[in-house]
Image (cartoon, protein in one colour):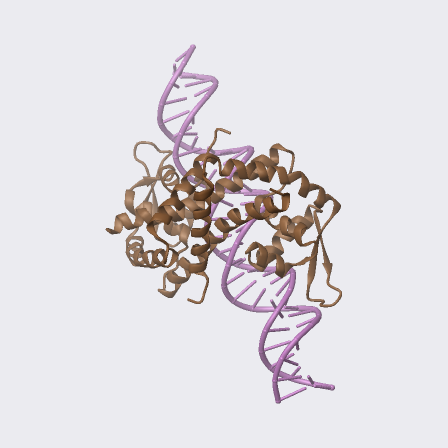
Length: 150
Length: 150
DNA sequence: ATACTATAGTTGCATATGCAACTATTTAGA
DNA sequence: TCTAAATAGTTGCATATGCAACTATAGTAT
């Protein structure tokens, strides 16, 4: 494969992933804004596990969301700023802060769930379940390939 | 599908795309740094078309890279800051600025090409060409689904 | 009991991103 | 010929991200 062909081929995959993610983020925000909700996709992706785990540490949230602890700190900062969550000091281990939904947070969670569902349907329209499955397998394999040790 | 199952399912796809992209970016920077090169994956993804087109406008680069013109401006700012490119005013249409590689930029381009190749091989290790093809088809379909009109 | 190591979370600095509004220039229409 | 609309690119403000270094606390070993 020539250099140019190699360049073109590689850019397609990396660029497609990059572009697809930005497009999904944009569509979610658009659907949320249309419904009067002010939340980004990444904030939503953290809010979900907070609802699900009910009293998660930031470390647990980082693991579940596959996000760096630094970024988890900042996204929780933003959710706290919007009065959707509060940080509660763990009674036993004072290093740990547990993140809990406020009433407004719970309300927004259920308000946004159908928006997430709508966005999901728009994303995967006319794509077979089989192809989605292969897609996720490839993504998981890529993640596996790039997880150290290197 | 229950709400919880729906939440879990959707997060997997969005989260996997998000994580895979960050992992790829990280690995590329790691490989570049190991070889003494100071360039990010997104800068590389713009540098490639600049080399390829030889005298592209910023608009053309945005189209080719599927990136917003705002972001193209900033990435070119960074490349300019590193003396890898220069902006040249178009002789005919003075709104247009054409982006050209400097000698250092050309040198870096060829220095980084094998790094990109190495990263590409690491990314797709043990993934069949058939699955890669399906993967790209799904990504393109997602992009198609999310391109307006909405 | 004390010192060292590890862990949870935070902050500064840097990169990437998009919306909206802006400036400068070109194009189109009256 | 002039005015309005469109286009190319830039900038402010906001969100997301990771590395490195930091603070505070817990765990381990002597």
